[in-house]
Image 1 (cartoon, rainbow, N blue to C red):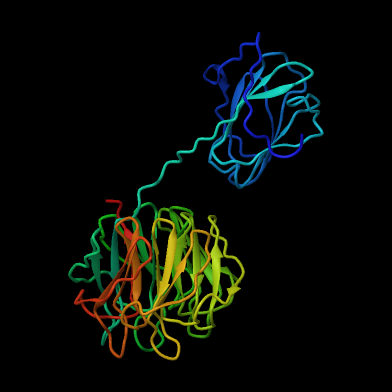
Image 2 (image 1 turned 45 degrees about the vertical axis):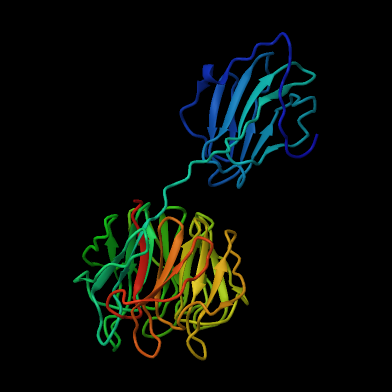
Length: 419
């Protein structure tokens, strides 16, 4: 018997197994890479950070019972291996591999006799994983018209952009923005004026859409960067440029909105790119001044190496999540303003160009809204504009809607609020 153990139901007359509810459940969750277990106990096995090898008792009696449970639904990523410690497992000796690789699984083991050894009484999978509520509203903020702006516009769950709200932190443009936590947003970094004043500051947005005052000193000053949510409730800012060069760095954001120190060397240095979450807990950065490339971000915030050739190279575009687990990049500039989009699958694959998706423009912003939809708004054609394009939950970009607040460009946008 080699490989993964499938579903096995024990029918062994004469032996009455202790039910899982009657076990002594060990209160400490197992997070180590190895653990030795005892009969009569139940164990929570958390493989979020690493795989785990479980050593069964060296001796056992008929009816001995052990239960192991996937605590964090991560066995599909980091598996659990059983070492039967000299005893048989389903009639095979302990030189055979017993591995469980399905997320949400629980295994109820009972010892029969020296011939069959340990047998899985049940190895059930909990299929109905809870689904977190999704972002319902959005916010656009900051930007540039004929001067630097300190204003925001809230977006309803139906995709309606509200009137201007002024005085929402230090006026700036070329800003980064993303959701974080379950239901909040953050704007950070940017450029104060048309000279050389780069800033390192952030503004948190509450789950009611209120922009907080400035927090300064949050990593290297820069502008024209990208940002996205990852890990379900955290965020990442990455790339951009400062007064001397394009940057290859990132800053993680905790689920309480605290920006961490710089991490350098995270893919090709560039600016003018965009970013979106995808797959429920991951993110993707793509495009920018240096070409047509992307970098995936895993659910622990680690940026992968460059992937090249992912649609038409451009900069000054925007991106947002849609459909619950997918993303979309759209618009931008390369030898002229672009009217195109590229969808991102829930595995992080960028599709080929779709052209003719609203007025060609650059330097706009995008947010998710309504639980599973997205919106692109504002930007620059041959002047700043006030228009939006809604994106359906299947990734279709709708025609322009004009007159949605003060026209501006180089602003930020993010989703917030669960209801």
